[in-house]
Length: 145
Image (tube, rainbow, N blue to C red; front, top):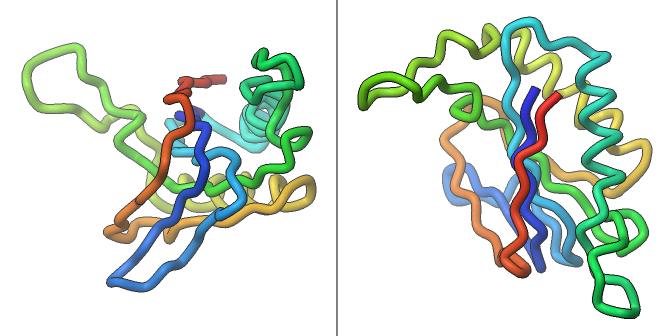
């Protein structure tokens, strides 16, 4: 399971011109990729890492606070392309990605578990989404479990 996290001032996701999820107070945009073999235990481990990752500035300006301590939220967007194999050729292979029904179930599980801890918005699984954000830093990390 993969999370590409971006520290943002704000982020939103639109489907067919309608905003389906947004965080205006800042926080993390979480692009979530689900691979074959991923399960709830991996989702729980990745969520703990996302919530605990210290990438927000403290009073001394050091990256020492996590998203909850910084008062931010999460915008979780499904992104199957994170599971792509790009080692060969000029076209990605998606053979490592989970089947759509399995990926959607884990995406929803991740969202539900996150919402127990922090304000969490989402995109729309398998939709053609337009994601807008103001990256803060820029600060972007690849987390994988």
